[in-house]
Image (cartoon, rainbow, N blue to C red; front, side, top):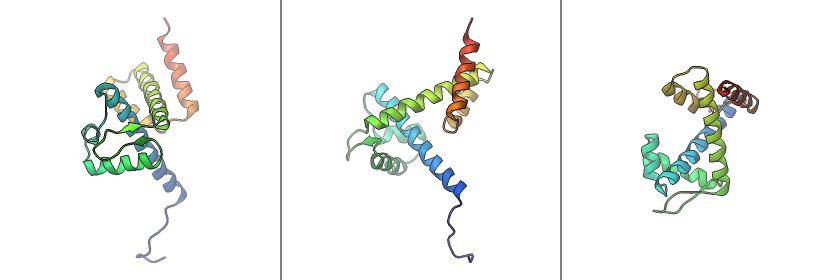
Length: 142
């Protein structure tokens, strides 16, 4: 291979890119659900504001969510979750809450727990999540 030939990503890099795409989808469907719950509907501008990104970025991400069956929309219409998107949003929110509560239960401050939970929630295994939940429940018992 020469310096000018594009290389194929190695297997770990492909997994990392796929994980990041999954994280993005989870963050967006969770945000859409939250915005719809509080505002009654969700528009691209709401997501751009929430994530601090451009409308172009939001539109590209929404197009992927539509393609993957998580959302539906049309030009100038609100963004809605499909049943699959709503399921993903609920699961993502639940994971986030468990991680956040666990971090608080071990003494992490609220702002740090909120920031850390946002990243950890996407990478935690079901086994670890189950233990986080167990520890949190044990610590909350009188």
